[in-house]
Length: 73
Image 1: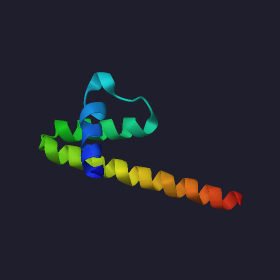
Image 2 (image 1 turned 120 degrees about the horizontal axis):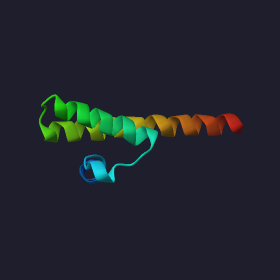
Image 3 (image 1 turned 60 degrees about the horizontal axis):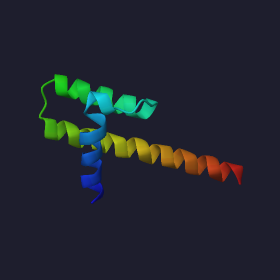
Image 4 (image 1 turned 90 degrees about the horizontal axis):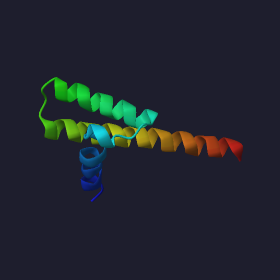
């Protein structure tokens, strides 16, 4: 279910230019999406890689936040 939600998020929020989020993380993702699409890669592969990259970035942010919280304690 999580994989489907990520693909839907990429398809509905990152891919359409008029609906893109304007924050640093989303900017990295949609720049990567545009670069991969312009290279002629299959769109399903591009969407999958963007979702994977988003998960990796989310995990790194979660680890950083957890480490910062542990240092405060």
